[in-house]
Amino acid sequence: MVYLIIGLAVLALLAIVVIGGALRRNDTNEALGSISRETIKRDMGTTSSSSVDDEELTGKKYEKSVVATREQESRELVLSQAPPPAPYIPPDPEQLGVTRRMFFNRGIIAMFGLGLSGFGAACIAMLWPTGVSGFGSKINAGLVGELVAEIKANNGFLYKAEGRMWLTEYPAGAIEKARVNYSAPELAGMTAGVVALYQKCPHLGCRVPECGTSQWFECPCHGSQYNQVGEKRGGPAPRGMDRFAMSVTDKGELVVDTGTIIQGPPIGTNTTGQEAEGPNCIGQATEH
Image (tube, rainbow, N blue to C red; front, side, top):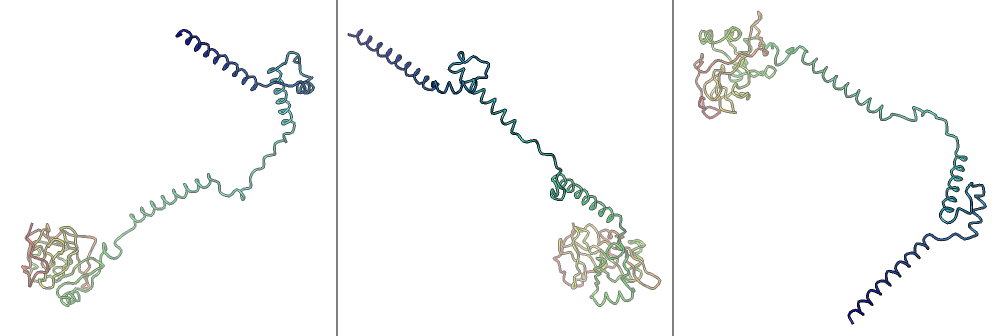
């Protein structure tokens, strides 16, 4: 019984294989197709000039020969109908406008021009003579007598914005001590009764205002304090207020050279002996 079942299964498998092969051959034949006699006669009429024997061209070989003949005829037809190439006409510059190459070339030239112009302007600015007027130049502050009167009218302090300087009165009784501590460009103004002080604090460069109650200069940034002639009295400043070179003309005019800054006197210099004449505007600072 078992052998019978096995035999039937083998026969069924073989039958499936045979039927599948037959179906596959039929599909292949249908895909290839066949050529009718009428088609063969018509094609033979159009290809009678071929050198290949018609009896030998059957099936696929005949199809290939016909296709090749038709392609050759189409190629010859296209070549025979192709028009001659048009002559080259250069474009009109006005219609063409600015090309991309022209745009980039002009842009590069413009950038070089701007760069060279800026460099030239910087060189001219560096070489241009400075100090013609204003800060960095020699400023004629006016007659010494008038300046002293103006200082007194302003409660002991006179500010000149064009020179970034303070003008204060230097007492005649302190001249002898001043000769020991100050240079000739400073003494020229002091002996006439005026001292010109740079507005910047020598500690960190803050602008130092006057204090009307103490009659001192008192820096609001870090509390450095200076007497009326710029000598240090307290705070973290490393020295007294810097001052400008001065001279007095034959007419009695004070000329302040704001381009020549002289370092302030060292700590401990106190030629006038001036103490605070009232409450300080800034809290009492200790010396560092």
